[in-house]
Amino acid sequence: MMEIRPAEARYKADHGWLTSYHSFSFADYYDPDNSGFGPLRVLNDDFVAGHRGFAPHPHREMEIVSIVLEGKLKHEDSTGETAVTGFGEVQRMSAGTGVRHSEINPSDRPVNFLQLWFHPDTPGLPPSYEARSYDASKLENALLPVVSSVPGFGAASIHQDLTLYLSRLEAGKALSFTQPTGRRIYLFVLEGALTLNGETDVKRRDDVRITDTPELAIQASADSLFMLIDLP
Image (cartoon, rainbow, N blue to C red):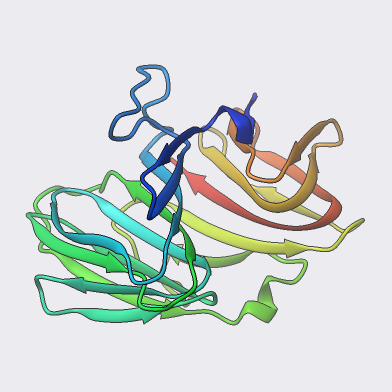
């Protein structure tokens, strides 16, 4: 089964320095029928003005992944970790028993990044942080794992049974993805347009929540960039 949530259905929060599009319930947006998908709890598509950002604030018991699409993002946290990431890099923070962090745009131009929260598979972990780069050329017409609980992928690690892939698919090209029966697929179109299993059309910033469909055929009807998450 495929549940499509079009880009226009996302909640828009406009704070002046921050414009955020929420795919799931978050902050002032609450919908009891849209509070997560498996362990995926939050997906915010954030646009932050230059030299603005999120001041230090606390988190507990959450795996937080940030993927920069344009611009730069500076992370600092109470464990002493600091990093500046851009496109071609991904960061994962395990809040665990408690951590404070900030995310600031250090440049003059806006930054656009995805912020994803996942419930961890194990409570009570110590806080930790990881920034990992990936070869963006390997996105071309392939699914590249950039965050995963599976060792050996060369991806950022995460305390949850999931793998997050990115792909840049040329118009007319196709990919297939197979997973064991009983798992979930979450697909988010970042740019372009896709056709799924030959019949379901999705466009820029649409999301698709897929269950009971272990084999997925993905074809690009325009040059596309998308994210696919294999979830329990």
